[in-house]
Amino acid sequence: MFERLRQVAIFKGFADADLARLAAELDERYLEAGEVLFWQGDEGNNCYVILTGELAVITYINGTEMRLGTRCAGEIIGEMALIDSSPRSATVRAVTAGRLAVLNKQHFTTLMSNDPVLALELLRDVTAHLRSTSQRMIADLEQKNAELSRAYEELQAAQAEVIRLNRLEEELAVARRIQELFLPRTLPQFSGWEIAAFSRGAQAVGGDFFDCIELPNGHLGLVVADVCGKGVPAALFVALTRSLLRAASQAPWAFQGNRITDPDLILTGALWLVNDYLTREHGDSDMFTTLFYGVLDPRTGQLSYTNAGHNPPLIVSRDGSAIRELEAANLPLGVMSQQTYATAQTTLTAGETFVGFSDGITEAMNMADEPYGDERLLTVLHAHAGASAKDLLEMIVQAVETYVAGAPQADDMTLLIVSRAMLPA
Amino acid sequence: MKSEQIGNILVIELPQRLDAVGVSAVEKKFGEAVTAHKGTTLVDMSNTEFVASLALRMLLTNHKEVKRQGGALVLCGLQPPIADIFRKSRFDTLFTIHPDREAALAAHT
Image (cartoon, rainbow over all chains, first blue to last red; front, side, top):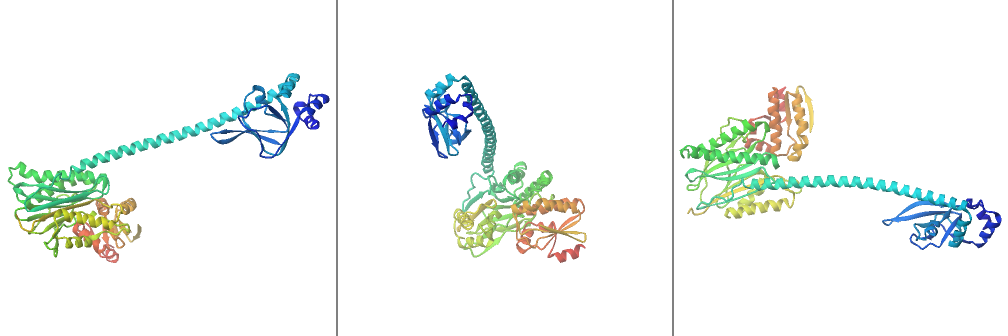
């Protein structure tokens, strides 16, 4: 022990006799690598002079171990608890195996009071350790603080994005409710006829619409339309086209004392006007609308119609054995100005059903990206020709939904079904 | 989307599916190629099996644009369902349409 203490720097001022006396009083302690000398919070009655080996001073922050420093041979450890009579401020663990000289409180006090040089030396060591620990803590806090600030900024940005998206979603929900008002709120009722309709956008707002416009002389305008594309751009054109078409259909008789009642004149006049307006005012958008427009006389079943590039509606015979297309092909609205729209005439006889639809029905895609197709629609119509308009509509929607089997809706879907009763009332 | 210059004709081959996704994938490149070429562009649609209305809009927009510069979009190789869409929408009256690439090149070179 004496030889070992002799090599320790803080005892260099001790006379051999004094050191020998001290050495005789001290116990020696051996530590294995990894062995804990004392735990943070323990009561401290001894301090130690490291004779050989290396010790780590560690503390725990939120359960994570943090090394405050290391002490080597020649240094004193555990002295702080003896100075201020407080529990251990940190845990000390052996990094390598080593030997320690154990000084109890009385040894320590005696050494301090008898040897001011040693006391000062020790005080210098303690101060240096405290200083380096506090500097390390400050640096660590600064780093943690910077990380926190960064995380906070990221959180704020994410929150702003969430708010922005929520606002957009709210606006779209409002737009959707407004767009629903661009469809008839109630479908007209005519004795001996049944009308059913369906429209569902692939996105919040859609590019399809249908309409039932009450015209003079008890005539009924039937409209199915599809603006190219979908979503908001298409929805804006739906609002525009639907409004123009209604106004243009009703204006001639409202302004001219009900003199214009001829279905063909209403059709050609309204379409000419709407197309001219769209190409003149909105031609730069290159948006076009395919549209079927028929004027039905519910008393006779006569249907005058024109088709501006839309999927031809189908007329299903009473037993489903015959299905005919209402083609009368013209360019879609908004493509070219000064268009004259050719009309055609047919008659819905008792038991016949008119089926207008958009390509979102026949081009509904399944998971394999294969379209529902005209053939499948025709099969449903053949099989259920006698059904009511409402039932037939539900069966078509059901058949399409079964076919797509949960694949996301590719395009806006619209159906307008008008059936004439078997026995006219 | 493949394109090549044959004589003074720019030939562009459109992809198989021209749905909304397919159109947005080629729209920019198609428009740039057609307007940079200025003259006659032959659009070969023989691989195209599906056209959404946005594909018709893409053709119409570029046709109108290039016509202002004295050029034209000419179409060829329309598969029967596509030809049917062009007929029903009367888009067949807006474009010169040839049965295949050979016939189109013979007519325009």
